[in-house]
Image (cartoon, rainbow, N blue to C red; front, side, top):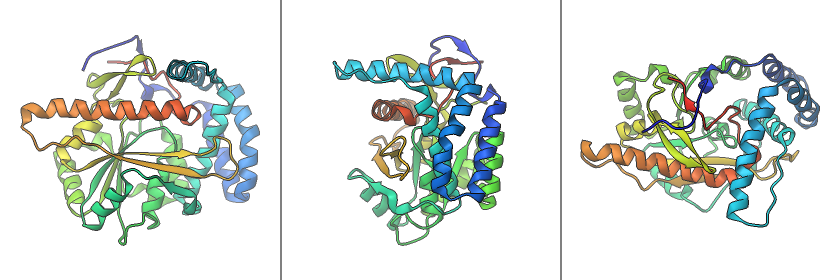
Amino acid sequence: MRASGKNSPHWSEYREAAAGYWHLKLTLIMFRILPVIVLRLLSFPVSVFYYLFSEKAGRESRRFLVKAAAALRKETPGQEPAVRPLRHIIAFSLTLIEKMESWGGKFPFTHIHFQQDDIEGLIENLERGRGALLICSHLGNAELLRGLAGFNKTGVSREIPVTSIVDFSGTAYFNRMLREVNPKSMTRLISVEDIGPDTVVLLQDRIAAGELIVIAGDRTSANTRNKYFVFPFLGEPAPFSFGAFFLAALLEAPSYFVFALRRGDLSLRPEYNMHVHKSHVSFDCSRKEREARIEELARDFAGRLESYCKRYPYQWYNFFDFWAKPGG
């Protein structure tokens, strides 16, 4: 672990802008009274409003898209990827609608297509009563995974409880909206601030009972800002979470990287590809070797995330300076 880049406010310190709050609130109101197709159509003008009144969102969108375009251009010379922040924000709005649908069980889960990767191994693992740790990100729509499990659409013959480890910092409005859509959705959330020895034992028990634990690996902790890894990401060093991968070592459970990615960024009929990749890193090792394996797991995740970011840049929903050194 080492510091890199300039100092900047931590992502959790960005206050939810007024435009951001009304963007969420207006979306929720429309979700309750309008057919979903109308809501999707209206998300276009709503996104234009948000784009015009949220300078930070447009700035950070452009920062990311420029880096993603440069990385793709270097990988495939001759391509000239477009940089369109408004398109980025519209894609975010559409994904937000689909998150609300999945929270309420209204998303057409038949529109989620599992790929020929490691999904069969995960299902087999779950059928045998063994739990797993799923490491997701803010690329695409990870909430669909929780929706699949919450409404027994995983393809497993038994119900699979899911516990999500979340950082509530800077997302008060978003959490309020989630609670309004489905109050039960908050019952199996654990704040990162509450992680301690007792919580780890609880999570180990849930893994042993064949459950799933989900945590994002692409945001550094608001509580332990001096602990993070730095890996190359779209051409520049970027900080990645330490805690998510340290938790994998503590749980000693099979770890999978999961990405739910929209087939069409602006499609009015959403179809998603669900990618599941099993990590080859295990923690059946000495304590001395464990730290190296934690870093290896984190590096593998960062590489996988970068690969998908190049293919789906408009589905990246970290609207802050991702490359800045976390403030200490």
